[in-house]
Length: 192
Image 1 (spheres, rainbow, N blue to C red):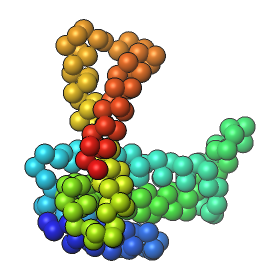
Image 2: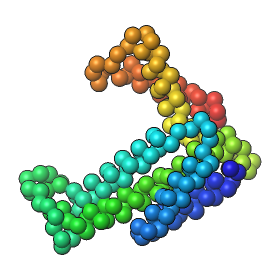
Image 3: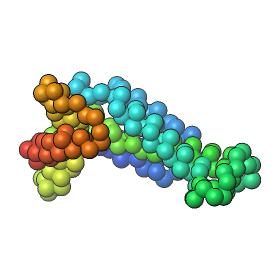
Image 4: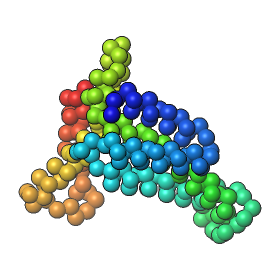
């Protein structure tokens, strides 16, 4: 897919997803974004982590809204007022608003993901006008950072396991987290 077309499509989809509260429009944007991702993704990219992130973001939005928004008239459940922040009524209206908000978050994330999954970062940077070369380098670095961290995590975790490293406690994770962050930052800067 042409990088300029992907950027224009992503911008248009983000505009629709973020400018309306209508769940039908947000659902259409989410389905269209998923269709574009499936049809035009690069061969080396996987959609499973993205789909998991979309589900987590939408579920978190639903739970936060349902637990902390105590507005509405149709009470489904009462949480004791002794529970800080979440204590009070959980209403049908709050859950519906949480679903709508979660759908908007998922649609916006899926629309933005088309740039990093469909188009390679160096193609996107190359499609920018010369006047935006520095901005393009920053965008390319940012777009490559998370996928670079995922690749680094897999490589470093495998290397550590071959050396006999087994994480037993949370305090063991810095042994693998520091090399992951440093390697992904280096690869992003090399790309820029």
